[in-house]
Amino acid sequence: MTIKRWMRSAGGTALLCVVSLAHVAPPAAADSIRDRQWALSTFDAASIEKVSTGRGVTVAVVDSGVDGTHPDLVGNVLPGKDFLKGGGRADRETEYSHGTAMASLIAGHGHGQRGAAGIKGLAPDAKILPLLVNTDEDLQFGSGKGETPVSQAIRYAVDHGASVINLSLGDTFRPTDLDDAVQYARQKDAVLVAAAGNDGVAKPEFPASTPGVISAGAVYSSGKIWEKSNYGSNNLLAAPGVEIPGAGRDHGYVSGTGTSNSTAYVSAAAALLRSKFPDLTAGQIVNRLVKTAKLPESMRRAKLPDKQYGYGFIRPYRALTEDIPAGSKNGPLPAPSASSSAAAPTPSDSADPDASSSKDWSAYVVWGVIGVVVLGLLAVVAVVLVRRRRPVVPPPSLLGGQQPGPPFGQ
Image (cartoon, rainbow, N blue to C red; front, side):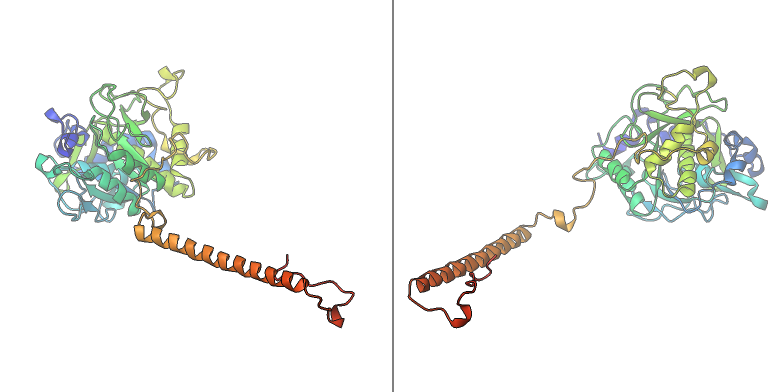
């Protein structure tokens, strides 16, 4: 299966970046948007902002690019990189609004007096690193040779300061290079969050089902799971995902439903925690989210992790304020595994034949020196034995004293 097939399967349903905004409402006035952000009141964002705003944390948004000129995002978006068109920037107006919407849920700061208008993100002081990996045009996804854009973007993200990676995309196809890229990011101590999928089935999506990635499901404002949120043993957390407003094209706004939105909110919560607890590992950050997550009252006796909710829907304020032991460095995540292609080889790992030859010659020189020394010792011993056979009278200074031993005579 080619890269373009991974990004957009037949019928256009596998590409979460498109599906999550399938129920797109007409652009709304900026002054009415904030009232529709029910997730903020559910999270008690006003109280959260007194504890952490995500300052000092960079979140990579691996998506369709982000419009850094949107009034609700100005100043929070880094140049990033376009992995489809020769490596240019990814922070300017694009034809597709999905990445901009996800970025606004994470780090939108609103606009107007005291930022009261427009979209407010859960971590408004976090920085967004936009990495463009997909569009609606199939021909832009290349031939499928070499590393896929998403895998390239994951590596680029951690190499350029991102400690949280938002992946509001996925497919049932599993690229062969994805596991190595994820393990590389895990070894660099990044938190990776991906969309569970929008088909309401138990079929695994990738990268959400890749070991080490947090799979995020979507819930209604009531806390009930969205019926089209994919489920399975890989689900770890859930977050608001239904009728979520976000920043859009032409400095406008959109509203959408899907696990892309819940992924963005889990990423934002991780950014809040990374800012408040900079010494915790990625696994310990996820541990705080898991330990403070909650299931609906009707499921309080369910076995965890539940196939739909995982450990429950996130409660960022509790994750920030409750007394939770740090625990093991990997928390609920599997330990990152070493991979032959997970990192570039270091000089010590080199298989250069010249280097090997040098080591061999060094060994020959050492053994040659040892051989010369041994031969010298044998020669001295032989001389001493010959002299002992002669009737030589010792000098007066040695009479009655201890005879000197051989050279280096330990």
